[in-house]
Image (cartoon, rainbow, N blue to C red):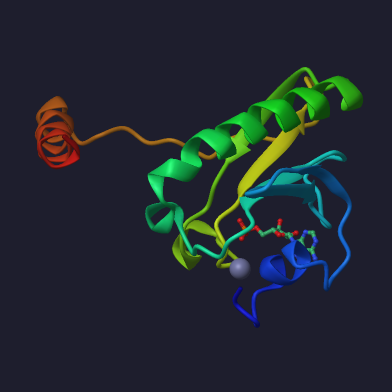
Amino acid sequence: MAQDCIFCRIAAGEIPSAKVYESETVLAFLDIAPVNAGHALVLPKAHYETLWDLPAELGEDLLRAVKSVADAVKVETGAQGLNLMQNNYEAAGQLVPHVHFHLIPRFDDDGLKLWPQKPYGDEAEMRQLAERIAARAK
Ligand code: AMP
Ligand code: ZN
């Protein structure tokens, strides 16, 4: 446990939370400042900072929790859709450096827009970048 980490302190029961799911390895609770009511956070109980720090063995527990909590949030809020988000590092908007997945219930009329998009300079630029990423990702 990281003493100065708010999510570790929630997992240890030192700080209260609106808990919605718990297993041996995973915890979920409602975000204190929701995008929409029912916005939940799913996280490993153990402290890992980002996606890349997570051991692959935790993947199954996390995905099971994400799917289960997502279904419950969707049904109980009457949402028509749901966004799954996960921020890594400050540049991507990560405020709490304990890896977590945002489950955000969405409604046809909630007025939220996804991020703005932009085109590549040309198709060759996109293809070259795809080749470099593919070579590294395998
Ligand atoms: P991120 O920007 O991805 O690191 O998200 C951190 C999220 O944690 C934010 O959406 C906060 O509203 C939420 N948060 C911070 N402190 C608490 C807390 N004590 N209980 C519940 N949610 C929290
Ligand atoms: Zn932590």
